[in-house]
Length: 172
Image (cartoon, rainbow, N blue to C red; front, top):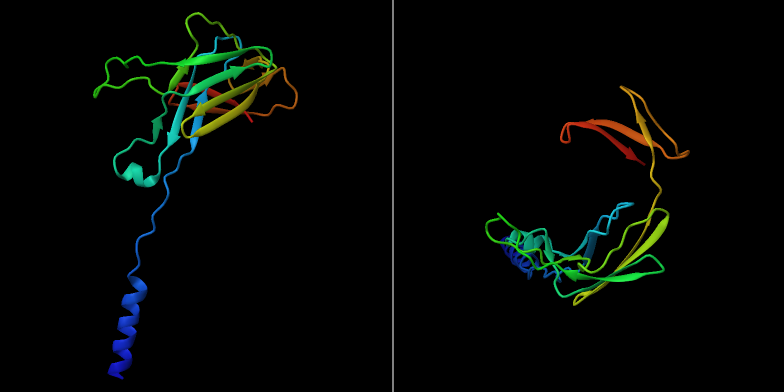
């Protein structure tokens, strides 16, 4: 009986002593930007998503990617964005805007409604592509408990949002 227990204990040691699983780094690249109808194109952020292991080691949730080639096109015109390398004021420890790409001061690019925009970012980790359609504006009429609008088939959700101190209306 003791021999069987000894053999089971040895077997348990061999089964439980495995090398830890090494995960490959996640090289997922994300482009983040806001295209607002009637406004100039502002900026596009290019980031690498970090792994949970990197977060535990002290990394931030995402790491900016520098030296990318970022273009935005509306189908008739394509602009190449430049990286913003300025320092962020009043931040300690000091940080820069690396990984954020914006129009050159010589370019203008106004976002229009009912236009599809293509964003392409070529980075050292790969190429990211995105496409979005900027919808036409919705006119809202708000009263104390009613929201009406001029677009049929666009359901709205109305909520009181204390973080912004007002009413939040979201199209679904």
